[in-house]
Image (cartoon, rainbow, N blue to C red; front, side, top):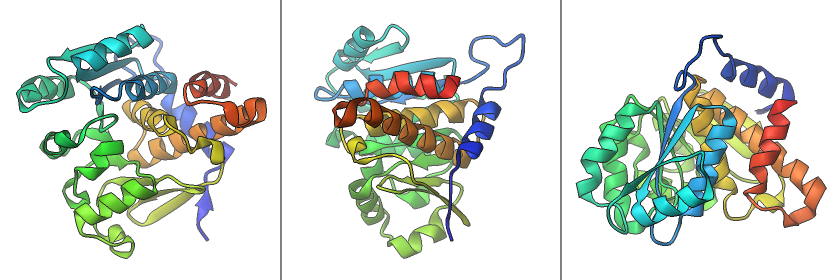
Length: 272
């Protein structure tokens, strides 16, 4: 029988992530880079970036096309924004994106990106096999699982189908090529999979099937990963906290809660 993540598991992992030295300086507890956004989508970057900060990491940079980056700056003073010239990502951004990736402990890629960026996403992911990363949203349409290393991949049902198709895999053959990655399959019951191990997360509710909750989850994954948790532990803790925040909000607001409400609820849950 597949085991489920428990509150005891979450407490243990959070204590590990939040371990701090008395003389800690900015950056010791992790720097996250979020690469994403487009003319159409900006809010997802703020949702993911603030969630990474709420997870406890020290620093989050948003690298986005300039219009999206300026919009995120208006949404949060806590996020450092790197505006990239133009209305979308282009090959001439490669050098600057590589410089940013090298300065951060973890990068999250895919949120809010357009169809035309698939080649750039794949190239960046494959160029940094040893760098810890989170691949979400459009990034899951761009990569082949066999060519990805040290990543948490966070697909919902449709994104999982796209990832399998792109990788020329079936659900039965996925486990054979998962390698050192972690697959976080979002659904009514979330599944966190690594080679030889699967855990389920059974909290959460149908109200989470709305825009933005997945961006919050991806940001939590990146934030915990940047603080030194393993890929599997970061994914498990993020999934549990994300689902629990949704359950608490449902009790408070019914199904009227929105993804941005989760940030404050996450803070309350983890400060108890």
